[in-house]
Length: 446
Image (cartoon, rainbow, N blue to C red):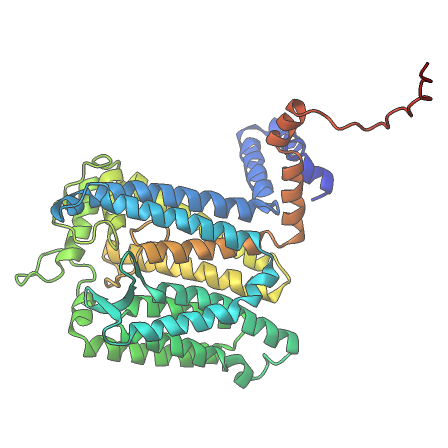
């Protein structure tokens, strides 16, 4: 793509349309495909996709949190807007973090790697201390500061993204990744330390996401297949032991594909999640008109907000949410494969794996295809810590997306040719471009 094509995209599109215009319906289809491919191949497309999908997911999530949490808030003697206002504050703070991460150079991300990593490890260690960590719904994952609660395990994912990418990028530069020792150490021991601290609190859902991120980093760095097979075998053995030793995890595993209510009330949440999708049909019952949130569907505004969306917005709403996540994943992959900087590649790939793995676990749980893992839907579910960490990941992804030379040039051109600048240029007085005439000789006073 030439600089002239990048500056005048409509000229390229017009030429493409004219080329296929005389070929009938098939030609018009080819012209449409060529236009789509042109827009997708532009250097700024990943950046704009990340911005657009994130804003849509956050706004739609705020709407669904308000709709799904009203009854719960009233039952707890709060106002109907209680959970919505808390989520709105979290979204605003998350936007600040997003802008902060997106505005800094990539070099700054590499500078803060170890402060973030050690800070997260320290916070996770505090959670494990009796009397300091707070237990909610059977898991001890929170720190209570009085006016807000903080979940450090959510930021463990951000720490692994930055630390893992920086570690592997330095090893690649040194040429030591061909050795198994340098490939696995200290990446795997560091990840195991995070997993151990998280599993002390019982948060297996977040642990699964961290394992997926480690696999993604090893795959991007080119680890041999036998390493994946061995690691996967160990992970299966460990997960089986964790499921067997905790009764409620085994019960959740038995709720996959449930269609009938157990006489003892098991799988109640999973079954009513399926009922929500069935009640919604194609176009839903209408925003705010769902009935499952009145008490039949637990955690309708958090872990099962996708089921509440299926009931009120129907198949159209759920497919829209899935489509937004698919577009976000595509943009993250484009950022990862469109750069020569190893840190950018590894960080973008790990962050994309984080968002996509968490989304798939949540969606699979709501649909009854996976056991209920207790992880929120990124950028969508209620949860302050989850919103802040996900928005931070999006900010990092935007920082990486704008680091390429093509994106920098496109952003500079858009800023230079923006409508606001042109309108301000019309309104504000112009600077003098010519020098003032030299003053003549002073008049002699009489």
